[in-house]
Image (tube, rainbow, N blue to C red; front, side, top):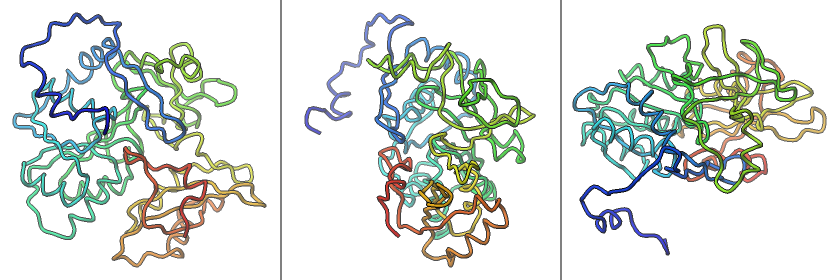
Length: 371
């Protein structure tokens, strides 16, 4: 774009000698913008001290097998993209970049470069699975599929495991950094969770109105405190004060901690649907619909209703080769969910997303898509 040079040209213009720059731990290291799925994107200030703690306590403790080859399809302006680069540099892992998240191209690159692991949003893995079923491929080197950004459906984890590929998911945000992670060694019975907190990460569930800390198995707002957290929003102290109190950051998500210390996500608190006084958590409904064969993507939002005030509606992208219908989805939901959680069903060709590939639910609520 005008006013911006290419990454390749920037590298060519710089000397190969190591720069002699004095850096202090309190200095700013990176400005990363939030995804803006619920409003205007804000720049998060990540300090050198934050990065040092993360790599000294978390990333530095991980062991990578010799010959590890990482495929990057994540936008490099996103937290996950930046972390991937820094992780690979820190551990000396070979990193291959792919600017296109087309499923066929990703599998081509995995075969061609003998990729062992990659990171992508759940929706990308869903379309990759659909593509993989069309053609026989040699993907024997590909062992670990890392994911995050949104909750990974249990069925998706299971389908990849059936192909000998382990899925690992992380939970976090640009502000809160990495908070929890789940991997298969934690047990299949915990696939519905996003795992346990990382080292030095504190987590609590808070009542959204009173601010009181809740006990296990109670749903409330997720608050996090850690040495990896952001320093604040750039030039926006007012916005920072709204989400950070006593060094605790409000993630803006609804969730609960079970008896074993695993965190379960119910979705963004702003997305919770109140139907006749009952709370409907979109993630719960989406998880059930994801179990249905032929569903590629689903997003559940609340829409106005004269009687109930608000009712859930599921926007669904389905595989064109399957016979899944509105009636079959509703019937399946009736078998799995309470009656007040049964959604209306609308099939669409695609869901509105931002540059990161995250679904923009506010646009669905505003009626951007039509049946």
